[in-house]
Length: 116
Image 1 (cartoon, rainbow, N blue to C red):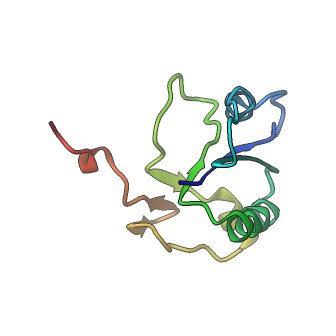
Image 2 (spheres, helix red, strand yellow; image 1 turned 135 degrees about the vertical axis):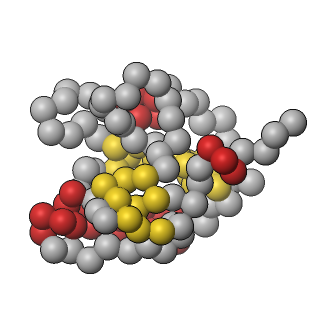
Image 3 (tube, rainbow, N blue to C red; image 1 turned 90 degrees about the horizontal axis):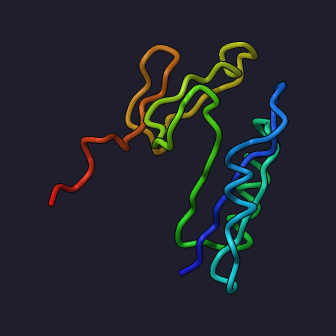
């Protein structure tokens, strides 16, 4: 099973990115894990990711990022696309459950967890 895991470079006025620090500390022991650092540039990062997916053909893709106002690890279930709103770029709902105003709500929620 091949896994691709990504992190972002530092952005705005922050000198580091917690996702990048985690990625740096993941040890690669074989060719089944590939790490990828993405720039914080919407179209550029998407194109780099898409190219890497096509080349590496992973079975699992783990996309990590930093939420500077959160104090713990969390799964993002909604995201506000501030860039698309400011620039007029098109947004997509592909792979997502629904769009509510400026927010996109993920199909992944705490309710989807299997109970034991």
